[in-house]
Length: 606
Image (cartoon, rainbow, N blue to C red; front, side, top):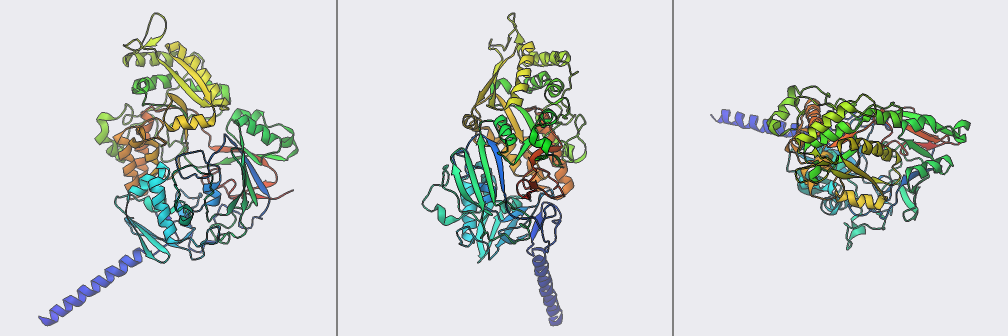
């Protein structure tokens, strides 16, 4: 008996040891993390694959931006921040490789640690990490940044902060965050949070727009500024991270300057005059017809089409469904029918650009237009079947016109839907509801949005056939930001770029909290339990297959919700740039997006 008991204890002790060993092995700190699977780059990688590790340092880069700025704090909702602070001056714990769907590698942090279920994440800071004033980046700075951004920062930071059950210092250079929900993306989200210097903000209100420049740990320092006109950054020769493998081949310009102009046409003229380094052309017809000026002919300006593999995203004219006039999906479908995409696209783009089919179109994450939901997509949508808009499960595709200006078939279908929704045309030719109120609304744009204004004018004319009066109102950039932040508009231009790794930001785009909470990106006022359930399924997905199914289901609900009148997209970016600028031969998966220009470019004079 004694022998058996002793053997049992020894076996029990051995099992405990083995279990602890397995847990330790599983939780071994890593150099990087991927949303699913393992990160592509090994621990001893020498540089990102889409950079030139031997790129020379030097030269300058100038970019034009429409509008102005009145703040150097891009981390709060108030004010319009200057470009460059969050990308050039401030760093994050981890850095993103834009040649993978969603993988991060150590930046301020030398390692990241989490478990298989991702119930927590622990970061260990690099001992050499320094702010630009020479002071070390500490755990206290990390903890203060996370809490301050979550409580007083822009609303986009709040959701992740609420999912943290406990934040604790676990060592001189390590900090752990334990979560209160199941969300596989949270370790990556926290890895991308900006880290600020706690001491700089003691005794100061963080939530206000300010012209005080944050002390960061990034590659550049603010060198000069002219409020609302220009802002210039100089590369920091003492940057602590210049020799990190992740940074090798990046941030090569000695100077980066952003100049502000009244509108895009003014930016284009400045580029033609040699005052800017590059220009991104969104209009394919203009790309083909307006780039024969002398600098292009001489070779001083180069034209390039940069391919990408990211989703189409959504762009077009958005309905503010908070307004009673747009609350009924039948009304929104009628107005989508009245938008003659084929005619407008032919007029503005020579018919060369395809229409955005859905929010995640042009990717494996997108639904199949017109086809019914099947398999896991259907399983996810079934509990919400009674409340889903028509087409979410059965299949929905945008209407197609015959390309003629009259668009008679679609106008007849639109008139029928409007009548079903309680709108009828009176003897005076004006569409009215049962109370006799006319159907009229405003399309709000920023001064200088000439292409969108042209599309809006064609649309306004088409709406007259339905007895609808729409008016175009163009205002300055500051007014536009104020009004859209408060959702004070009927219809406006809307664009949301979407990645191959959608996650928590989807709640900011389409979460119900944005119906009343100002400053979110839910401009259309989506208020759908199905949307939030699909986002939750994305965040909890244990593998790539379930994640894709949840994203496609979300795509179905959003697209069939008829919140936006989609326009066109392009699977290439059209860049014109100075011949003195160079970029690597390998184009990243995301193409000309965040992480490309000016990050990996360099100056090399002829």
